[in-house]
Length: 247
Image 1: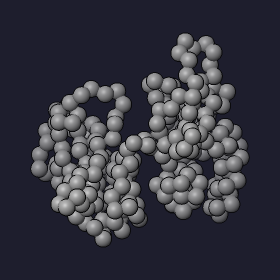
Image 2: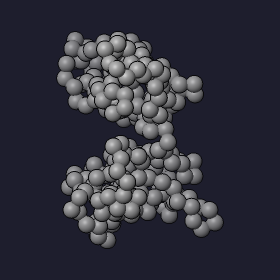
Image 3: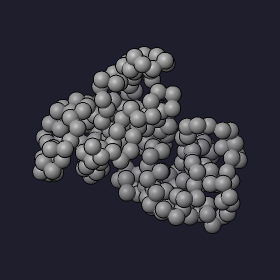
Image 4: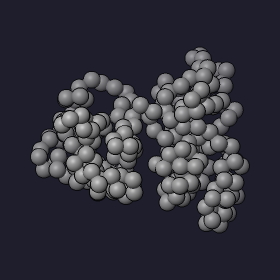
């Protein structure tokens, strides 16, 4: 099978989920149907879609159904993992369960699925909506790290200069909330006012593709136009070394 990317963590398994051509096709369809995403995944922000081998990982929802627990089923490994939670928001769906739901809810899915059915791996799906501690909410509108990342990716040249970023909400002026993005630049790239302005413009334009954000920035431009701060490599809030980015 073709694999485009994988999902996992260094402390659990780096290839627990695999992104197959079928996963990519489903993700692209759901991007155009936020209502379906909301119904299936309880979020209008489309999640990442992967498939996983249930003979290697037993995945079950956590108590609040917002996260999931993983038990590794490989008896040959020395580190035992039972109901391990890496605090990513997500869940699992049976293969037939998700396929039936998409056939019912998205008219053109059945025709596109026919082109993938023969070579598809009939493994269950694992959907990931991002880190549960990463979402910020301003005036009732949720902003996710993956929205910012997708926006920055609209400018490939700019994205090459960026190492990582953090999003947060900043309270000022009578406790009003503001959208803040702190960006760590790649080693050797120096922060400048022009680069800061380019980052802000790219984030706003890219995130306007999301209807909820577009409406929010139109109604409350002062709150949703990001307050961007750029930092040289390993400076400011990025001075500590971390294996996994924390948004």
